[in-house]
Length: 241
Image (cartoon, rainbow, N blue to C red):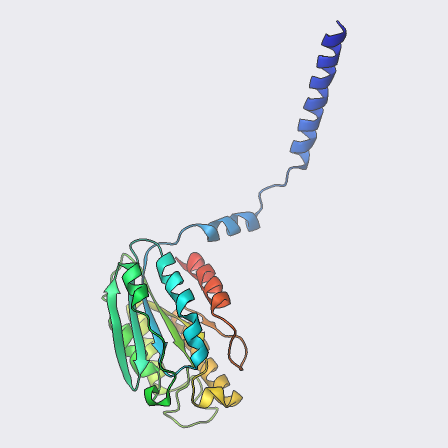
């Protein structure tokens, strides 16, 4: 009889504790659901990666993390890898669903003024036109560039409002291509002039805003790594796709 009373009392206590635990359980909030949604796998996308060839030598240290990002894309994604060099678009890898092959096509930028483009947007426009209009996948460009276009001179009225930038925005919207960008200074003006850097960033900002993409930069004096860029880019992709 004594043992039965002990067991009965123990069961009652367990029931009380369970009830209290349920009462203090944290409810599922909208924030929790949003965090869960962002961790879900994104849909396959068509992604063109464009790298300006005359960026400073530190960019070469980020090739490894860029390869990792390509390989982390969902199966079925199609990737193109190109370099903006000496006024032309050098396609290292046309669109392919072989993500490892696309990653291996990356090379170290030359970091030389001999590779400097007149402005990057002529080549970005060329890249936009390589999307075939596959309605089953979202289209996006990742542009790694200083964003500077001095084709209309070097003054405040030109920043973000050059003719080639306008053409890119118009064509990207027509083909439904969102343009994301990572800012990095080149070995030219943007590594020596904060004003030039701010003009380049203004153009990248407008390109992202007006095409449904986003520009990423860390102040005017270069960057540490692309790690934070890719982390934020994954969040943007999770929200958009």
